[in-house]
Image (cartoon, rainbow, N blue to C red; front, side, top):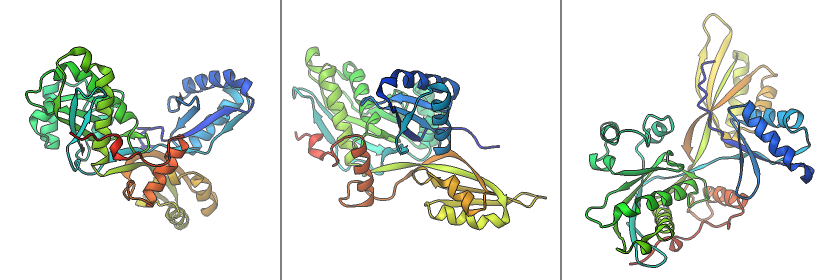
Length: 364
């Protein structure tokens, strides 16, 4: 197959042993599973939940089967599949945001704005990285993405995990002690981009700008305990005021079948917000190759439905393809996207409503 495995583990399930006493066996089983399959990611959430992440529901099914029968050899309870979303922004912040440190002695002024198209993908693919020569990187950002040359040179960090597809840029001029707080600001950005303001999903494709700051001259008054939370709050305020959006993962579905099955493929996709992007006759054969986009959130049980609709003849291959904006404003009360955000927040045991802007935005 010519389908590239740029696999992002976008489907997750929580697993726990039927018998709590067998937890050590589960943990050991998960360790062995992740060694055996490079495409599976096993993690433990802060809540203590064990998560198995894979590249689709079939992949997860196989992983769970292997876990039960081979690696852990115990009975396991598995949650419904969970889809990973991302948070982003669609405009520049409508105002410059201010956050003060808890001791009120430091001020940070920031905005957020969306990346130009393609930049987040370039960072994901390692074409542009935190390790690049800053001058060379600034040249690429200027030529390919029309960034201001100075902005490209003033990237303080990437995030989350110091490598992710968001950046912090120091646009201040003549502000004292900026270098002393650089690391703290970077930590604040890692935190704000790992858990976004809408529903603590990872942030993607956002550029945060520090436009101005007032930093206390006394080192003890501008430590991490003061600057890191202030930086996180100002990033949250900037995200909320930049028309935030959710991104959902989309599969590329590849199906080879005969012409007779094509109708069944279209109807199955239509029921799931999917759409065909190409349909090609394979020369000299009765076979047709259909490629389609399908939201991961609508992919559960897709293979089974497709087989039913095509008399068992069509077999789909699904791989993660791209992130797409979920239509609708998550901040619009009663909207569909707000419902989705609330559902994600409930699942994470967060307060259901998105926190209000006053929690993050300070007045002069």
